[in-house]
Image 1 (cartoon, one colour):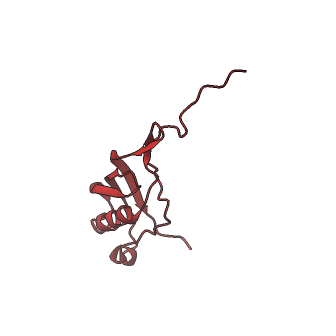
Image 2: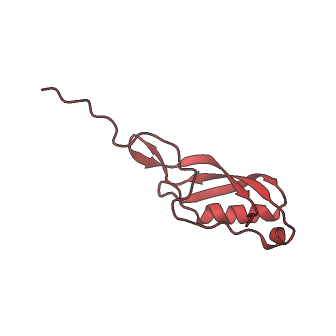
Image 3: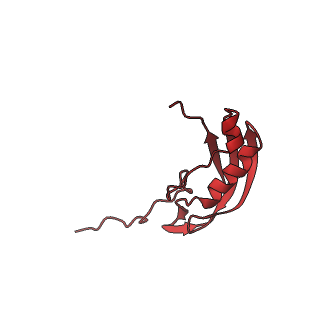
Length: 105
């Protein structure tokens, strides 16, 4: 009887795109009052424990008030870390796009 070859316990992957800790996005009050929507791209390093570090805004649409809200969001968020050979690793310069949309309720 031949055993199947042993593969990695977890396939290699990049850090997750969505937070795993149900963090809520805070919509900037002044943008709500002006009925403005926006989109911010932030680049962060994602640590082995899923926290972010070295975050920087790379683009903003809709107004600068969205920049700080997006940074606060990714700093509070926890992501699934990148994995290589079954071991969590730090991933550098992972891009996140944060979209601010007004609800149509």
